[in-house]
Amino acid sequence: MNHELQLYIPRPEDGWFYVKMMSDPETMAYNAPWFPPDGCIPDPESEWLDLQKDWIGKEPERFYAYLQRKSDGAFVGDVNYHQSTEDCCDIGIVIYAPERGKGYGRQGLWLLLERAFLVDGVSCLHNDFEETRIAAYRIHTAAGFREIGRDEGIIRLEHTREAYLKDKAAR
Image (cartoon, rainbow, N blue to C red):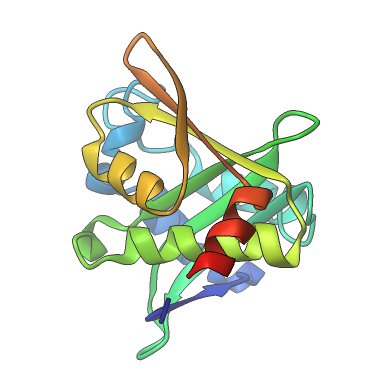
């Protein structure tokens, strides 16, 4: 896949974008059930400091990167994974609201898969989200994730390195 985006490992001075996204009610609306009323993270500056210390440079147990548009260097979202079980990592992908609808979620997910499976040697990736998030479901299944269950309105999806490599070889 030809990507308009690239992964960018943020430096401490790049935290402004994380703070901007975590403070934006439209971007964080999906997060409202956990952080009422609007999903925004309560002290994003402090969260940014913790994220730098606990996530950046911690591969393969944890990975965090911004999604950066190649044409102008603008940040459009972020991706991450972290070890959740012995065999699998949970993932996250957030596209900044003004940048949605441009295919960046799909590209970002593919970049995360490439990083996790080909660079860091992760064996399994997992994501859960609400059934109402149709676009998220579509980009995950298009990238090879398979549904492993549903419970109380939450879809559970998983993708393995083995399946990714098999699909990649078939393309």
